[in-house]
Structure formats: C-alpha cells, structure tokens
Image 1 (cartoon, rainbow, N blue to C red):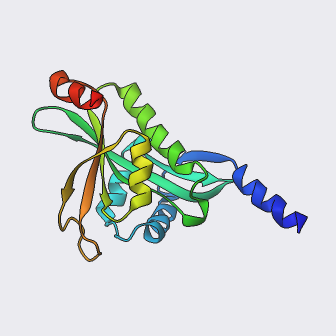
Image 2 (cartoon, rainbow, N blue to C red):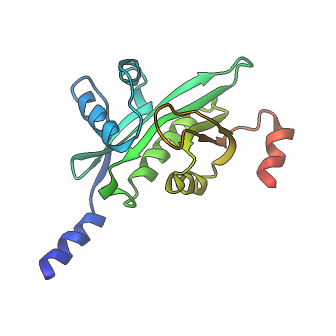
Length: 179
C-alpha cells in the first residue's frame, strides 16, 4: 500500500524540461500529435516546425516525451506581427502537472524577448472547456468563433483565443484591457 502512494507522489515531483525538435526526434512529435489532437497535420507542418527554432519544443517529464508546443509568426497586412500557437498539447496522464504552463511560459518569454509581437492567438475546439480555461488563466480572451473551422471532426467550430501583448493601438486595446 505504501509503495503505491510513493509512486503517485513521485509523479507530482517529476523533472520537466523542454528540448529542441530535430530531424532525429520529429517522429516523436508526429506520434504525440496523433494521440493528443483530433486533427492530423501534414508534412509541410512538420517541415515548418523544424525551421522555427525556439518556437517549437518537446516537453519531457523525467526524460519521456509527454508534450509539445509548435508556433509560427504571422505578419499581417498592416505590418503587425502575431504569434500563432499551432499546437500545444500534453498526453492525458501527464496533464495538470504544470507541463502546459511551462510550454506556454516559454512562448510568452520568447515574445517578451522579441518585443515586436502584438498578440498571441490560437484556435480551440468550442467544446474543449479545459483548454479554454487554461488559456483564460493566462489572460487569453475569446475574440471570435469560426464556424466549420475543422474538417472531419465534431463540433467543427473553433473559438479564436487571443492575448494582446503590445498596445500599438492604445485607444482600442488599452480600454479593452481595463474593462
């Protein structure tokens, strides 16, 4: 009885580390994504991931790959730069251990160091309450809902969640932040 309790306790005291995604471990990312997400990603997604450097990381829990985050930077027509979180996920048994938080903080730190990113955004399936709550803890807001965003999964609609980082349009964003 005691032994079982110890192993459960160890689970919460694990070592979480982020590592680079390389051609040598990209298959682990593919496998992880196939288990965590209801949509599949094409070869271009994985090719791009290998080129974004710090914006793609594997998360290790005691040296086991249990999660990953993959982002890209989009430039809009008006020249503003937005960071898009393409994927951020963790295997179910390892959720609620702070792994997602470490991955998201890595992304937030990257944006802070860059200093020229206006906001961070992502799509979340409308019924994924745990993901929506997770992002809201980090001051993301639902800014719109896109109908039929996903193909071949139900519900097909996605919320767009966004966190503003810079008040380039101070009048507009500044007021929203206070309300």
